[in-house]
Length: 282
Image 1 (cartoon, rainbow, N blue to C red):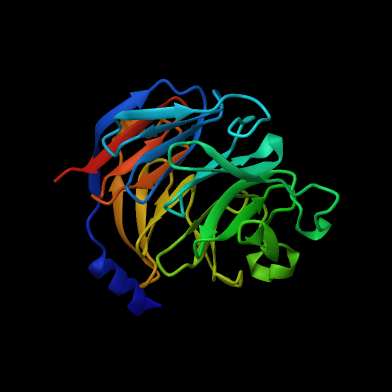
Image 2 (image 1 turned 180 degrees about the vertical axis):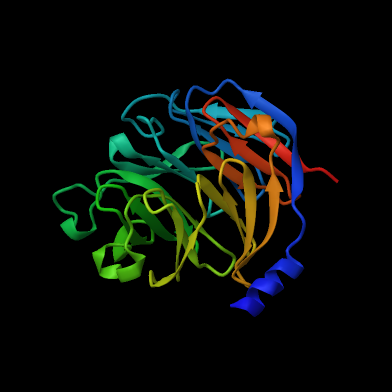
């Protein structure tokens, strides 16, 4: 333990400061953001029940959606997911479904499981967040039962994890799910204040805890853990913190809802009414 601590102290990079490069506003109640394979940015605004699309310079491209029950409409959605790189999934919780859209924000299909002909063991009423693994496997955060339900080919149920059978991997209030480059799965649990790591079969691997953890992102083999004041870079290969990026004091009073890391090591932070782009001061 002492040797590991000394190693971390020696090789931990010095803290660096972040500066705001751009900001756009006008959202009513922005809750989630994601990106596609070409690094287009998608913001989910639960207030307007819309998806707003931007390029990676935060230039406006398109928007779609409104409140309703029809395909392509939403009712206070909670999460937007571009993890397939090829399409967009929206957790449309009050409509009790997950919607799939193309990258031009046109509806394709939806998955609703609280139906008489659907196995009760794999049903959800409140889908909170989603993840696509191996191109077709849909992982849904079941907000009512505090677990992850897996649907092979996006529809046929195949696995459940994170429930009471998962032991140390039991979830209390999961709200976000992401994957790394090796297809390990990470779930943000707000009640536990931790990110829980699973393999792609749903077996518990480890728990990563940070004080006052608000949200997180993944890029390559690095976890980006955001506590409201700084972004903590956690190397998944070394299982240790390697760097911290600090926000200006005046920005630390804000509450950010989501974070995204772009390929040029710039950071997107989402507030209720605004989206900002940050870079490191060189």
